[in-house]
Image (cartoon, rainbow, N blue to C red; front, top):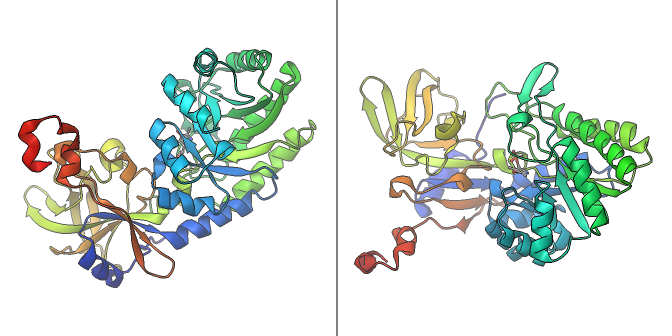
Length: 422
Ligand SMILES: *Cc1c(COP(=O)(O)O)cnc(C)c1O
């Protein structure tokens, strides 16, 4: 499928008069339409709730848009919990799915009334010691091990993942938690990431639903919810077919009836913790071409770098690039699109066929709405960009300002020689 930006060159030309590049731009209309579609896809399940994975796009303005569609938040750190609290998420609207958890974070999660999802059987003692009791509602994260396959394709390798409890452990954990006073139980698993297939969620659901039936039979606990977590992907590449969320919802519905319905467990709520699917396509990184270099290869240097979007440098991830205003020009030039870090992996694209790029052209790097800005760091003393929201009426709101050198130096305020820059 052809990938076109959600913003035009004319809109960008106007925008850069106020906001210097680079910046991340989010598409409110796209976010809303997609959130509504997800809600529709799981409307068959009475207790359904999406807990947006805050780590994907931690911005309170965006969280509040999702809140309008009934979403909660999924957090795994103190600051994500704090942001959820500040954005008005309360009690069981917050899921705390963390791992290697500092004990103080269990306390903050409990203070906010969040649902705590235990990554390990040893965390039962950690929670009990920290809080002095076991919460009435509790969730355990499951890891069946082995390889996760869909029709002979290996989707991911849970046996190699640090998360979750083994089958034996989760049975044991449920018994212990019940003995210690827990009353409502949840099960969670995240077995494959960025899946671009409608089969992932139904397959995962089947594994968890069957486990739920066994757990309820063997331990007598009441299973209140099953959390399918994240992992529904997006088509980063133009040749990929997007997931059909209605088909995914129906696929889960079918196994729900077959497994849970048949076992008399038709009251179990389905939860999800999608991040990428909720935001990925509805954000882009806008950057300007500031240099061209002709050496052993053809390079275009842009004013963004891996600090603004780490995925290509970190895992060689593909992000589609459009040269604004040259959407219909022939892609007859082969470029490496690079940032300014002193790291040779700071390349947004390698050997990419694009239209001829002139200095000053605006490049739209697609699908940065999730795990984009949020993975940013400050290597080379590079600063994080602003985040802007393109509203439904076409106006633009700054929802995070760009970092300044003062922000970068703020933690050196103990250092008198830095004074002139603080
Ligand atoms: C990262 C994460 C998610 C979201 O994953 P996506 O790939 O963005 O859907 C959900 N739950 C947990 C526990 C996570 O760590």
